[in-house]
Image 1: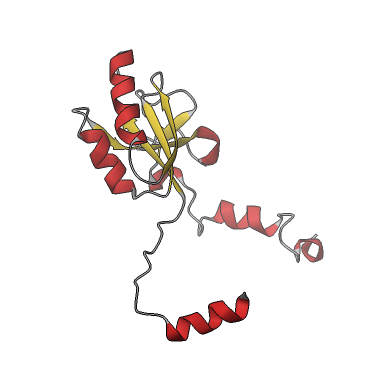
Image 2 (image 1 turned 30 degrees about the vertical axis):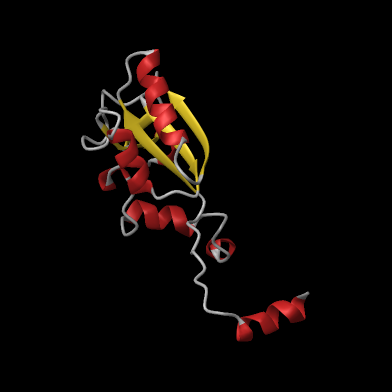
Length: 146
């Protein structure tokens, strides 16, 4: 079949192939108060083309959509339910070097999360970061220094 597929590229009538969107996970922050709100958001997103999985966490005010979708279209679809929605602005606490920086710490964030800000990430040119990399196990020349 490989030869037929190869030859069919040369002799086919020009039919456009749709470029498939990449598989991705979209996380959206949505304020949901009741079961009705949760159901309305879930149904609106799950009816979209390309959606494989929808997870709704009312406690965290979070909707996670997995599938071959465009993240902006998912946001617009959630906003069409009448709910105020935005992309998930938080990252996990353990992924940040400085979680208590003023721009990263947020009282409204769910437990275990902080805001995703550049001030919370380490500066790669800082002297303490250079020393940590110098004696790291990932550095192949670390033994020659010791």
